[in-house]
Length: 281
Image (cartoon, rainbow, N blue to C red; front, top):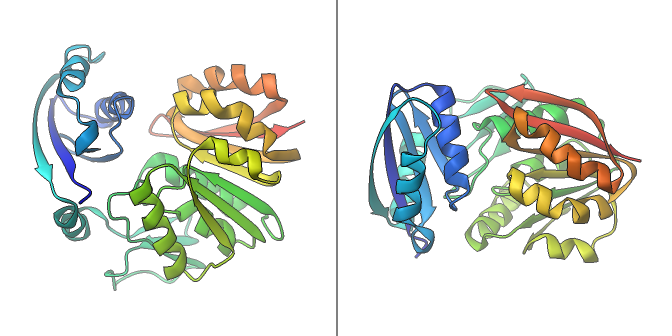
């Protein structure tokens, strides 16, 4: 059973900035899914990775002026799936071209790219700014006949959209076994058999041919640690899309990117979250 701990954080005063900062700090202690609302944040971490002392430290050291109260409870995997479907995952339209919805949704708009995602406990439904920022980039790019690598694929949404946009070869890597199984299921649901989903980490890149487009929506620390491997897997002139961090982290990423012949092209921002676009020399 893939049990999770649900931790409820009540934040006073509460705004988008405070919940985003809290989510970013929780990412560093293995939390992987977040549901913000008007009064705080509900966050989820695998039961075996739950660290009560680490949460207490985050609340104590929280850098913004806010009072945070929290409580935790165990959520069994099967129960979580039901709760997500009933309460959390609503259809979303990105750029008036792409709709993301679950198989149980019926009232959805007609757009060019219709993606079915049954997210279970995996990250990446399009609701989070980091995912939607990359989706917008992919909608603007010409992917016909290109090869794409989606590192840390989560639900597989970015790999699926890349295939729908005409990419000839799409590979996706996910380190979490439950998310990997979920991504494989979502690839099948959307009828994109050219997507190769692999279970593992950046070490798998050593066996991959260089690609035209490399995507990583993870977090700053993992990106800076693995960017050398990312760069090796990108063709000269290829595009790298990075997200999972704040705008103020761009220069931190760039300080490492430049060491591996990756040049800055642009970055976009949504709610302080950033998508960084690089090109390989």
